[in-house]
Image (cartoon, rainbow, N blue to C red):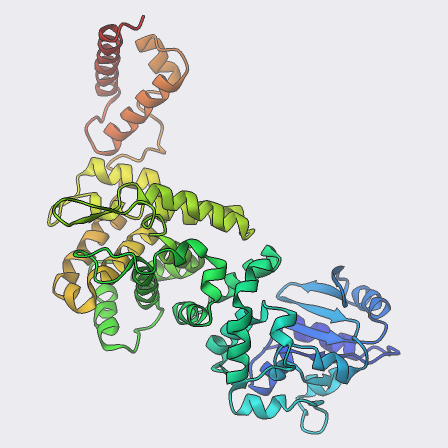
Length: 489
């Protein structure tokens, strides 16, 4: 299928431009692997003039996104073209790139025809490295020149089945700490891509091996060696990495290959607990970035709140609240979008809630479930899957498997619960009627009373306007008695 990017490239190739552009980097690498690209990098002499003419040809807008070297972006409906002025001649430009598999070039016409056999410019042996699945540095100082290439290497390992050479790994370990010196926006963009692909948990483990995880999330590193027995089998740090691995297995679009993960995935998704399992899986997959970040960071408040009771039990009172504050600060520092920060913060703050909504083996009350849905809204299902992953990481799959059906049923009750009367429907008593009935002025007290009436309506305690009026009178009378007893006029 021809994409808008393909069509744009064909139109540009048909122009009688003075300078011929060369396709470089990831698009060429992927073409050699038979993978279509929606982001194409090119270099061309006189790039600024060439881009202006290309933008006019395509009816697109050109935006300069880099100055050393000069880079312009042409945004299209389904991707974009990045065009750069080469640094030196083409061979020198390729030599300054990150990995040899990204240090190849081909004329635009050859790239479009797919006839790369004789047209490929490959001074560093990138094609051979690609065939051998090697991720080799284009130059010894490639990572020192730009430590962000550590994260790019981790991503390419996961998405393309490549593996860093020993030299590249050693360089990554030497430079990992300097990731904290990179512009936050660049780090976030690469991190978001890592946390959005299918092998996210594997990439996080790889970042941890190379020392990159500590540089991005120093609060996470504080959990190393923080014991939380007897309930948890792992320290705080490894528990969170385990939880992310379990989450990836549980939200996987397909049954995972590991035997225990496959068993739990099957009992979860092929049971009768979820009537709309496909739609639910799609929702969870769409929220994978924020859900994975929340799962990875859900216990970062524990190291600072750890207490050991007289009976030897480890407690972490207030760790959810502190964790939410730490998550907000860290993701804000990384320049994550505000919506991402808010979502991850909300999930971390409430991550204990699914386990607290009812005692073990008990069915949650309508009131508890109403409050759950009011607090979480569209995050109800994502929070429940964080809870499942957290539970599996706490004791391990083997230990939880005999009780897994109960956990699935518990989560299904939460996710599928609906109020007996939709709160969005016209209220039985609106604010104006409530003020007339009780004499309350506009303010927090009136808001709290409206919330109480909404809750009573949602759980079926009141169904008529008369019942709502009677409850409002009782609430107002009780509030006045309490105020009088406290000496408030």
